[in-house]
Length: 481
Image 1: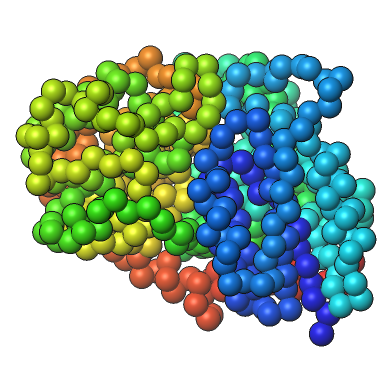
Image 2: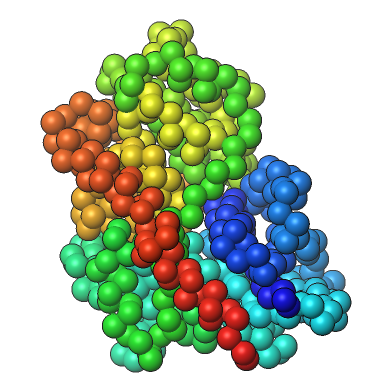
């Protein structure tokens, strides 16, 4: 039987690539006649994906392969990116690689034989410009949306306000206003809208353009499940004919674990559900002053802790954070000695493995969507401390909309190349950790998360909501064009 081949163009950053690869594995496990080519676009800065690539390239899946597009720029084009916003810079740099991506797709198509048919191109939300490449080769395009259905609805709503009502969303910056968004049951405070969405200098325009291009695809694949975001999914499905078909196929979990540094053996020595795990994503880091406030909060809380502490890139750079050569340089004097035995400071963390350990009872998280899904899969409640991208909106969703998290500071912003001027006090952090780990109020949240742990597993097995949605998607891939 003829193979159906899909071309994936993942976005920058580990979270986007990891989800795309796990989604590809899911597809191949469901249908042996599918194969996948990932077209990886290198950027001019470190996106943090290199550590992820090696185990995937040596994976046993013979139906998955990678094509790397080295970062190049036309010598005649010396323009600096129009914005300093990391997300806008990424989109612009990706779009500049469109000719090279086109050549790679042409090469793949030219080498396809009679046993293999290219069924379409699946683009990341950062790579909507590559829809042009699909259209040039008369291939269907699909969007792989790595955030929530609620946020997808927000993006499409902002685009609708702009295009149909000429409303500029950026006037909500620093506003106490609330917005009525169809994909949320509660009014959404302007203070939790993403920085990019409120950025007059190209950011907001980039969001509107991305949402507008999404309307051109054949289907939007969302890493979520109906039982978690039923309100948002119903809202999106009710717009059939106006927007592409929505396929909720999650949760997709990144099981890739590598470096350990004694983390799991240390957790083995801790009591059940006693450890609070602090981890802020592949791009998350703090100023020295903020690090000290976190340390004071942890020490005063008397909670056992595992803290993934990363060093920010140099000022003005947009590289991924790195490990501290000596964490004591930024921690309060004597902190490591005073907390020895009850706390452990680490660099990079194998997040899913840590969350799955029985000693972990709470997760202080940046609220990246992948991390939210991983915490639900592990049944670990969250204290929300968003930093960049759409994480403020995610934090609002898990705290106010879904009731599965407590808040540390929902409107905190520390976008990768724009260090936050706000310092969250040790008292605020300590209170959030105590609400997560000690207060009786956490019991209701813990029960909800415990229920969702079972529900999300049921969604992906036979007859589950995401299992059925994935079957419809595979049928769509195989439809005659």
